[in-house]
Length: 183
Image 1 (cartoon, one colour):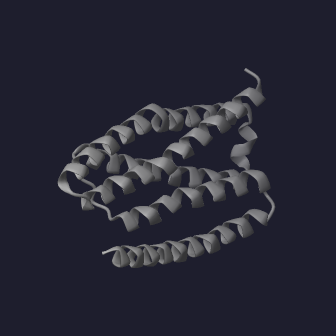
Image 2 (spheres, rainbow, N blue to C red):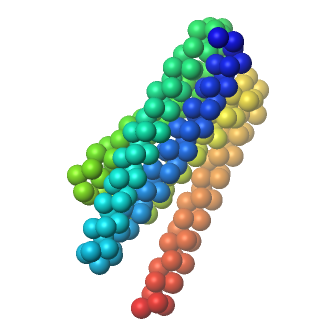
Image 3 (cartoon, rainbow, N blue to C red):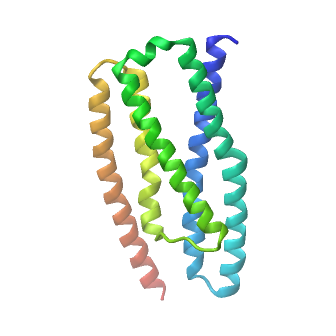
């Protein structure tokens, strides 16, 4: 198969994998927040979020993670000189971090399948941003490769992450104030 087809498939499955990773955490947040609802509503919502999480995880996210790895390996077989490049070593470190993130989400899926989740919705909102940071780092590395630009990109990501954390805290305060005013 032609190199560009393999690269295209790799990019497609990276995209669907990240889509799954981004959405699964939102479902975890909804599952957790359903705990605060009246019992009947909680039961209905959590059952629905369990089903949605299971389908998303096992039909889209896991297959995409596996196909991403297969096509990445195929690309490295076609372009073995990339393994000599320092940017590729750093990229593969971020990819390893992404798979660790994926496995941590699997741990949360296992908890949800048992009917509970041991994380607060606030912690999950913060955790949701980790995949975003990894995505930024990998894209900067792939596009900028050996230039120092990727370093500034990653430093920029860290700055964005600080802003995201502040935004999450501000959102939490605004939401708490809104909830307080509704009571």
